[in-house]
Length: 358
Ligand SMILES: *Cc1c(COP(=O)(O)O)cnc(C)c1O
Image 1: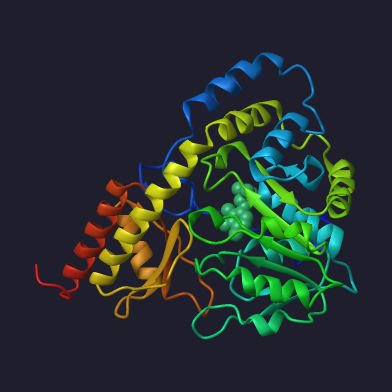
Image 2 (image 1 turned 180 degrees about the vertical axis):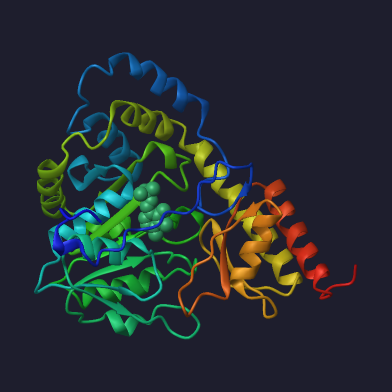
């Protein structure tokens, strides 16, 4: 820290993204990127658009917003597009929390939420998940603050039902409820259709996971037009050109070939279930996942050790040090071949320990 850094950030611990190592080729199952590259049309569209890089992009992102609205059955005024969904989440902390309105979210969830709360200088309360790492819905009824729920949750992969979300919305008419649906396309129910009925609902989605565009940085918020206007006030006050030309063009091409994305999601779901069975067969306890990752622990080997020994064998997964989850690892669902390698390496580890017959 330099002697110039504002004291207000003295305690700030920045978010730590998953490793992106350059030292060797890993089987990379640590950041929940899509197992498949984007459709070829995406690269073509971005390349063509690059000829116009001397011109600012459209701050209204109108073409892409219209295209996305049509895909989702919404109006363009119900959408705000952002530089990854991290950006719209940050905007929501800025717009809908303050010293009197704390942010409320589970103790085990997306690690960026407490970081946003701190950098935006708003109070927050972490509500413990139940013993089985599910959300206790009662904890969020008649709440006193802005609610942030990842659904499916990360890193557990466990989803809430639409009925549960509705109960939370119904009992919080004076609170904004932010539902972060980063993984919803891998098997959970989206509450996008509810934004017409509940003016306190903000749904956040991303192109990073189910649409293979993590490197393009494209996310969005969907809500009634008044909430969207608030978010745009923040957006125009920070970075009106938050989406560059290449990403806007890529996003349209990506949506034009959305059947390709949906097919990939189906493959990933199938691969996830095959991998889940294989891990269970090796003695792992695996939480039921509605996402493109599995959260798994082995009764005999500490989570950190599984992470480390897999890395030595060229497979990268994500380990979190949090007290309640340090026995687990979060394993992104890659291609079938990648998951076979993962399972083989885990089998090797168990054999080395004499926990399986060679
Ligand atoms: C990956 C992820 C995001 C954000 O991803 P972006 O790449 O910024 O769109 C948001 N929430 C959760 C729970 C995630 O896992």
